[in-house]
Image (cartoon, rainbow, N blue to C red):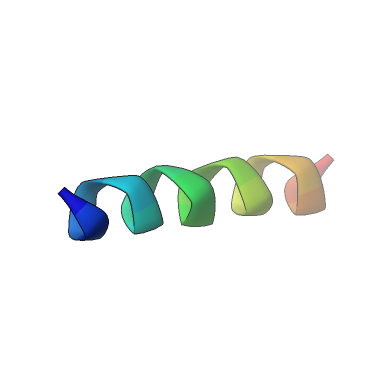
Length: 19
């Protein structure tokens, strides 16, 4: 699912950015 993939990428970006 594109939505799932997008959500996963968004979460990863947030985690990296938070770091």
